[in-house]
Image (cartoon, rainbow, N blue to C red; front, side, top):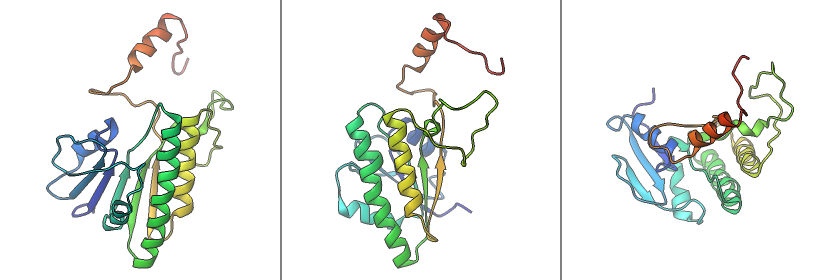
Length: 196
């Protein structure tokens, strides 16, 4: 079903992108990674930055069957706005029109954040699903929500999408102080037990 597809991974050098690349069968698929920095990979790597508008690169997106957008900025608000919103809009606007014009099917898989739902109005027994009210509380979550809205608005019968909304992501090789923060909160007794 997913064999012999041309795949593009945006943000392939990051934690999520690297792990995704390790799971894709490189022998049965053509895999290209768009990254700001070179790294060792079995995939073809195109050095470029999504925030610098490169029309030639964006126009090449129509040549792929599946695009995984694992790109993300966590710290710099200005870069978040450019990457998550401005660049996303340019790419999706182009792909939306080209997919229709060429009648070419492309599936866009977007890594977003569970934070787009916010946590202020969620009660203990509430369940969150794709229809839950969105209420992001910080700039990162707001920019990820805007990115989702751009994708949803640009989708059509040829440009399909899947939005993934993970919570905290943690694993081997991740550059994060997640465990340090967790230990800090436990020591300060800002800790809760699930199903308590």
